[in-house]
Length: 189
Image 1 (cartoon, helix red, strand yellow):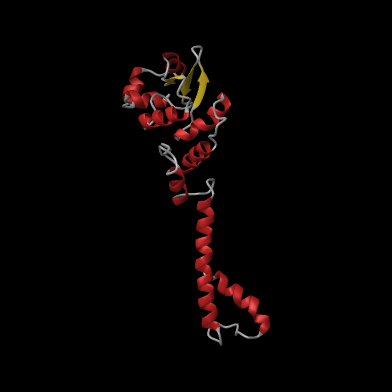
Image 2 (image 1 turned 180 degrees about the vertical axis):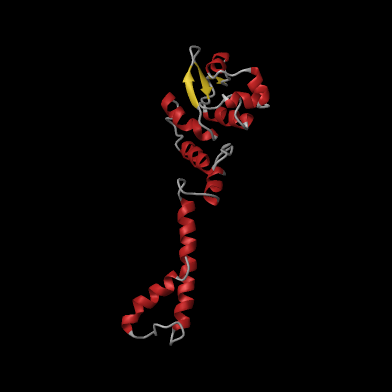
């Protein structure tokens, strides 16, 4: 925001004829100083406005909100941090239904879903994640904090099936040539 308010002040005050329109004329330095001060205030207000809203916050606003929770979401990107905080802020006294739990479960920091099991418990799944997600122990603790403690909870980690390998015509030679580890192979399919 370079010299935005100085030009605005010059334009606004020019009909009065009190200040010269040139930077070196009478009052030019004063208008420059006032404009620079207002530019600084404008920049600060833009920062405050951005950080005040979860949907636009990038740094301080997210950190301050995360400090309100027992555990910081394990979100690797700014967008996932925003989504996790928004999900956690939805928790209230009526958050014990399956729909409400699924709305708040992404508060762990990555996409997650909860399903009911036949044994009066819950199963947590991680869509689009093969195997154990990064920071799994941290994510698991956050999820257990969010779920009703009287329900048995199981975590379902999805691994690749042989049928999926066959569908993609994978061979051991191709896997070895790509120098996959077991984890990287799970994610490659």
